[in-house]
Image (cartoon, rainbow, N blue to C red; front, side, top):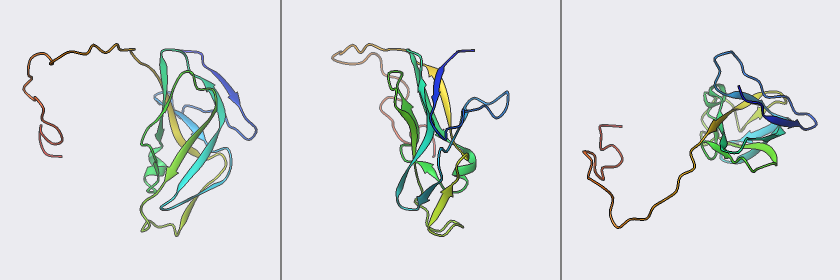
Length: 148
């Protein structure tokens, strides 16, 4: 267990784990917001957080919203340990054929995304002329180990 400092802003709701087995903290919308398809909506999450040094915060869309054809613009939000501003996420939908007409309303208190705080290794890059031995994969990229 790790202690992490958090500052709730007016209208903010404390992030919570939905179950004992949840990896991510559910983050809630601070205000009502409309997400128009084809546009980007900034959703305030109503808190600031002090992510410990050597850790990173990762924001993921909640599966319930992804089922409504909503997604995070940057797929995964990366929050560095030295960031002290308000937590937000950017939502969009590029599917105008979903069951809602032109926009989806995110309601105050609706669970929008999940925050996972994880340690990360600090790496030091060594520039070399060539990399060591060739692997079985080599330079094979997208789909090289099988079909998509």
